Length: 71
Image (tube, rainbow, N blue to C red):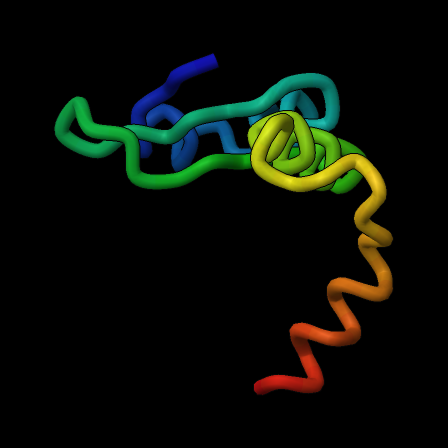
C-alpha cells in the first residue's frame, strides 16, 4: 500500500494496524520516503529481496555476529 505522509499523520493508528498485515510505503510530494512494516514482516521482506544474492547456506545469526565484530 502506498500512502502520503499526511494520510499517515492523520490516521497513524490505522496504518500501524495495517502494517502488521502488509508493507506501507509512505510518500512525501509523491516520492517514496519511508516504509512501515510489522515486526514479523521485516526479516522476510529483506530476505526476499536478497534471494539470489546471498548463498542459501548462510547462517544469519553467525553472519550478524561476524559483521558486528568488524565494526
